[in-house]
Image 1: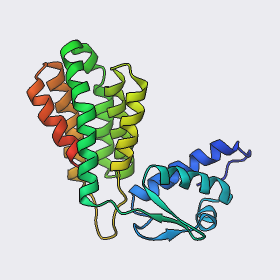
Image 2 (image 1 turned 135 degrees about the vertical axis):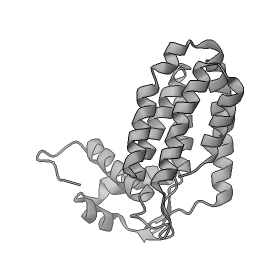
Image 3 (image 1 turned 90 degrees about the vertical axis):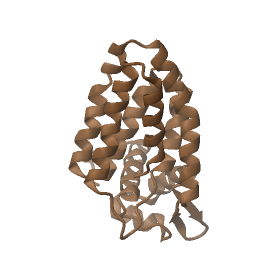
Amino acid sequence: MPRPRKAPRRHSVRGQVLDALRSALIGGELTPGEVYSAPTLAERFGVSPTPVREAMQQLAGEGAVEVVPNRGFRVARRSARELAELAEVRALLEIPVVLDLARELPRERWASLRPAAEATAAAAATGDRAAYLDSDRAFHQAVLSLAGNRQLVLVADDLHRRVQSPVVPGEFTRVTDLVADAAEHLALLDALADQDLDAAEVLLREHLRTTL
């Protein structure tokens, strides 16, 4: 992370470190099961340990890392069962909301979300998992924001982050997997615009079940 010329406020540094840590986690740069100290990570990112500890505490609250007293933070391992449970909760939260919106909103509102869906496709084509997951979250935020419930968007986004588990060394995500996942966004928008609720539910349920 490049050091800015002017010393930014603490929350700005913390935000930069948090973004960098999230990218390192989902990109596989930080290994599940390994313990990392705040000073070591601070040296890596060219900052003081304080914003690193603050960012790691937030990640601990999201379940991405675990606090190890007097040592640092261990990168959490998500079990298949945990991921399946998170997907189920997301489905219970998001699907009824989206289907209700499909009954009420005109085709034009769904068409306005196509740029967000196309952005996920562009990110997928690069093969950059971190960039794709960021665009995927942005798309889901845009869809749910149509309900006009800010708390819904915040809760759903927290669940979405928890699903984004760190990459295990030796595993990788194929570009074709990302591209196929991104294509589901466009297919979903088409089904919603046509008020094809059955197709929309199948697409959304499958999309939420898939973890990349």
